[in-house]
Structures are given as structure tokens and as C-alpha cells.
Image (cartoon, rainbow, N blue to C red; front, side):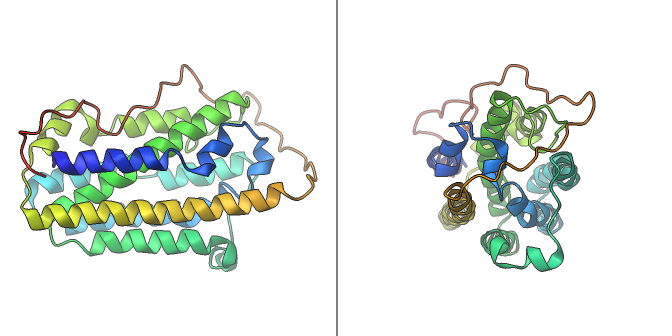
Length: 263
């Protein structure tokens, strides 16, 4: 699966240039980022079902071990997200709001990505789906954690914090020995093609979701600021922002020469 990993890295690098992340680099006041992060709600909840379905449908013992481990490592992050909304003084959307126009792009992307968990005929593609989503997550959590550190956010956060990024990068599938085993897997041409196409579709959906969020933020920024009162920080709360590492590529090690196993 070396070819698969390299393809993920290329798309991850393109995703890191998205205008949403460029906006974060200018350190706007958090209030000017509305409707982020509320518009991620549908995606965050759906992601837990993607993990579950991939785990339940994997049959090959080696893939099953990695996929199940991945599910366990990401379990409960939806509760982290809801806790962060509360800490930030944001109300989660109601059912009517969640299925309204503002959340349509997130629903479209989430359901399309959920279908990718149901579509594959080979467990290698289920693993590819999870690796692809994690690669995008590395970009997102790193950029958001850096932004919150720079603007001095001190509320106690978990989902949007450096801690979450550290947890993501510590996943078993990114350990050196597991990474090497994944890279050494040889895929037949049909499965490799299916996995490469899956990566393309995933990043297209993720980009579309962030396009819509960025458009809503830009529309709000064009209106005069109302300067709403900032929610009062919890007493003693602090966001852990110890040295933030430079973002590493999704592939932890430099690819070996072209003579490796296909896939």
C-alpha cells in the first residue's frame, strides 16, 4: 500500500492550502469564525458511525485488528466535541437546524463519506478510508490548535486542542511498525485502483464541506461586527499549548525507492 500512502500525502498537502486554514493563519477573533465549529456537528457525529461500520464489516483478521483498534482509539471524541461547544458558549444545533440549509454541505459530505464505509469489496479500502480521514484530521487539528494558542484561548477544550492532535498522532496505525506493515501490503491492481479512487472522492467531499464553511464565514465577516460578549472562561481553565510541533506529513517516514511492493 505504499502507493496508497503516497497518494494520501499528496491530497493532504493540497488540503492544507484550503482558504479556511489560510484564514486561521491571520488570527481573526474567534467570534468572526461563526458558524465554525457548530457546522461540524453532523460530521463529528457521523464519523463515529463510519468507524463502527468499517469495524463491523471488516473480515480479514489483519485488517480487522487495525480497523477495530482505530475505532477504539477514536471512541468518545463526539463527546469531546459537545463538551467543547459548551465550553465555548455555543449551543449544539437542534434537529431542525441540523437538517436545515446551513448544515447541508456537512450532511452531503458526511453521508457521502459514510457510503464509502459501505461500498468497499476489500478491507484494504476500509483501512484506506480511515487513513484518508485521519490525514485530513491531522491538518485540521494542527491548524486549529495553533490558531487557538496564538489568540490566547484559555477555555478548557479537548476536541479542538493540541491534546486531541497528540492523541490522533499516537494512533496504532501511525506507529512505525504498523506503518511499515501497511506499506508492505501488496494489493492487486483492481483493489489498488479502487483505493486510489476512494481517496479522491474523500478529499473532494471534505474540501466541499470546508468550502461551504469558509463561504459562510466570509459572508459573516463582510457584515459589520456586532461585537457579541465573549463567554466567560471557566475558572482555572487553560488550554494546553506546550510547544506545538511542525505539522508532519501523513507518511511518517520518507518513501523508499520505487522497487517496493505495489499498493
